[in-house]
Length: 101
Image 1 (cartoon, one colour):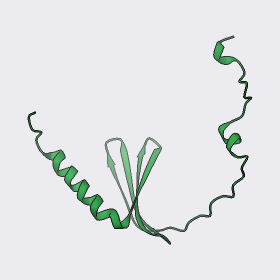
Image 2 (cartoon, rainbow, N blue to C red):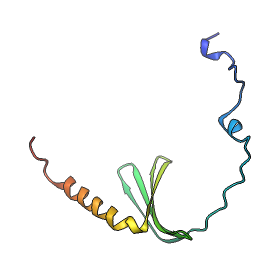
Image 3 (cartoon, rainbow, N blue to C red):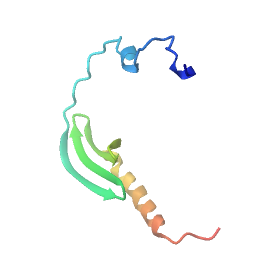
Image 4 (cartoon, rainbow, N blue to C red):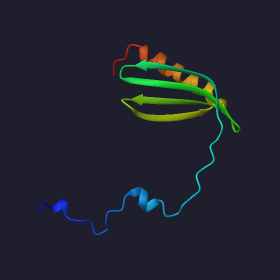
């Protein structure tokens, strides 16, 4: 028998089984309206942009999809101008010829 084939002293509990003992009620679904959505493909990545609104306000959801694996960030609408300024600056610098160190 290979050492990693021994039965676990903790039994065959899965992560889900272990954490479902508390039986929390499901969170209520928050209604979100999509105001505008768009997507772009950059190399192997697809970026989905969705401007949405819910009772708490408007926000931009940016989802990166790489081969089915998704990561999402959410920017509240009041921060979009500052976010855009930083993105514009990063884009400008990325096109400049690097300086010699």
